[in-house]
Length: 381
Image (cartoon, rainbow, N blue to C red):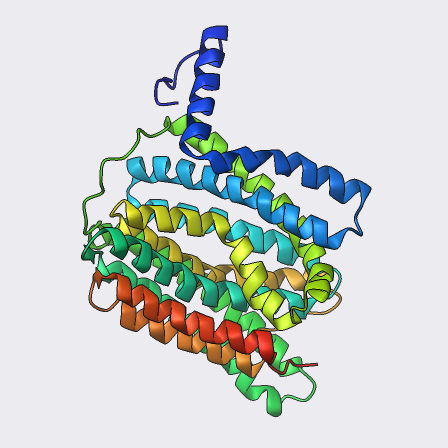
């Protein structure tokens, strides 16, 4: 696709070039052949909506090639805009899946599902994605450097959001009617959105020089044209959101058959599949010695969920939900989010990455996953 020029007209010769380029992409990444599962899972969901286990398996197969396409397109865009903007772009598009899923659950009043998916996404992005990037990048490169100013900035934003989530949970014992918690959550939602907006202004405008990449990227395969990349980003993101919604609708039935607990499904399975696109980009960027992009995606995505997605859902619940949703999470979720934030702060403090740092982050995530699989945490009524 690198042979295409942005101003070319759509002609038979250009279509032939696009076809050859598509075939070349499939040869380089055979997993892209799984793209055939995208229409298949959509048709199956319409014809056999009760086939939960089959829908679950086919949804996973469909998300994999979509994630790879999203990864390639994001890399092409970030190569022209810089890793800071590229990380923000990928985090935003990746979190669109969680936002769409939550918006679908709000009218039904499934607030527990919404909160579980949000908390699980924060923990998964902070520990699994960041740890995997350190591990995969470190196995190829002895020591990798990244901009620790950017990493500290994202970690501080995440810590602020965790504190805001802790407060409604702390006062739950004295707030028997939940009225105070709802009002407090609404005020905190507005505050967090304002802080996030000012953070974007700080990192992308007034002090953007502080967030420059600290490492040189390796020369890889040629990038797609910017126009093609943007179109692919939009189209693939829509399909990811659609397939993810089908996945969430079938995952509970499949979980019952496979013996997975609801807590494990919400925190681990849904979060991993929902973040597949971001993880693909983060891991491949780390292998290409672009750890700045990987750290920006992992921590930026977690911070964006906590500072923007969760507050937006609180506000939207006043219009779509049967009652307002609060930021009150159960103690187990708050504890895991706080530990994940502390781990991200410690790992990003030095501005250098090695593979064993990834092992430690993944070990913490494995501890959480094993605990949730065997003993689900108590949840609020």
